[in-house]
Length: 116
Image (cartoon, rainbow, N blue to C red; front, side, top):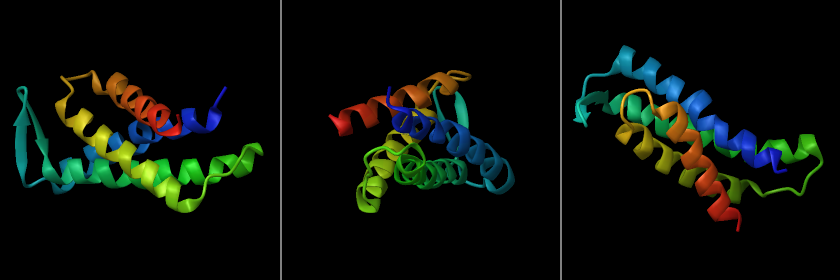
């Protein structure tokens, strides 16, 4: 029913989580442990950055493609930032293997709360 929000909510998982793994393994020098799971600060920053950029782009560009009401670029950046921040925290706190469920769920929740 709201394909723009559904696509945007998948960006933190598709891009943010993937880039967190890549950057964390390649450049991860500063590590922290949450619930017995070690993460890198560099991976978490990559998660935040890529989630923010790709979510914002999806929110801004998708309405053009679907002929839906448009969202201005500043609001897209704000919404994308809120989603990215929450998803980066959720990813860091998720027990092993559950982040594939918790990240998009958190993104949907944040976007739903912001749009209503």
